[in-house]
Amino acid sequence: FHRAVSKGNSELLDIVEKGFAQISKAEYDEIERRWRGESILIDEPGSNGRQAHDLDLTSEEKDWLALHPVITVALDPDFMPIEYLDAHGKPAGISVEYLNRFSHLLNVKFEPVHDITWVQGRKGLREGWINMASAVHKTPERVKILSFTAPYLSMPTAIFAQNDIPYADIH
Image (cartoon, rainbow, N blue to C red; front, side, top):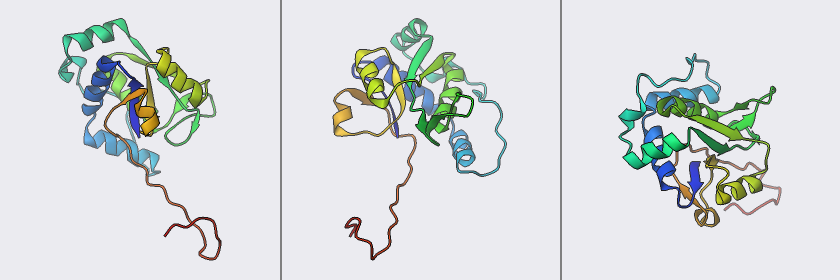
């Protein structure tokens, strides 16, 4: 999965790349262990003392953040465990935890837009009323309208079927 922003929003794309680069491998591993069901304790999301000035942001990126203290994020409300709404209607999931950690680094608020469909979310990204999406598969169609970060999460997919049931030729 990638994070994605509207084509032409290079400032936000660079900020997102730099910010997520500051999340340590240990923090990534901690979040993944939590969502794989291993029993570990995680403190409140934090920046481990890092600040936005540690990200080596350009003056244009700092200006962009000053003008955009709230960054809207397309959120799929039913894409568990990546992102979803919990029983109380609160955004949850792996991508939400990453955004929470990142928001502390930049001192910005990520505002999930979760009362829309994915089609409406893509429209919002194209039209600019949504700033980014937090969990997107990179496809040739989407590359035409979105700019993507490096992948941050990989989830293998497997299809299981009995050999004697003709569902699909997987050989």
